[in-house]
Image 1 (tube, rainbow, N blue to C red):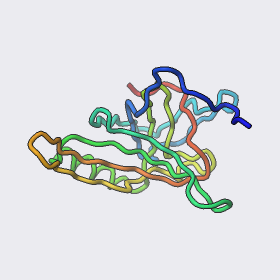
Image 2: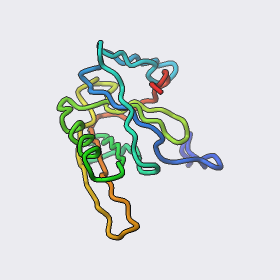
Image 3: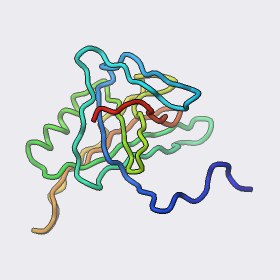
Length: 171
């Protein structure tokens, strides 16, 4: 028996994350979902709030969702991970900013295939399941040809998968 909707991916499919925009969840007043279209069409922000684009090192970002635990006590874990080149002041400031967002963040995540996902905003619970800084690892590398970096992981737990974002992204 086959699974409906599952099969081979398209030839030349691309993995990874291309761009990430973050906003503190306290800056969101509403997320409009269109059930017929199957995705969010708009994120309404409070006055003065905006999505900030995070520039990460090329080919270092990923977004994954997975089931954790055993039924009926399972949950969906969301992880957004990316790396900054260098281990200096700029990287530290970026990590400090993520750590200081105590209420957590929501993210628009554009994949290399061109799809956009709204992560850190729960369809069932709204801002109660935001992405929060779970891990930040600074690595100096071992040799002269290595690239020092800081890898950041934002994580949340929810009861459902993220939904696509179909609206305009803040280029």
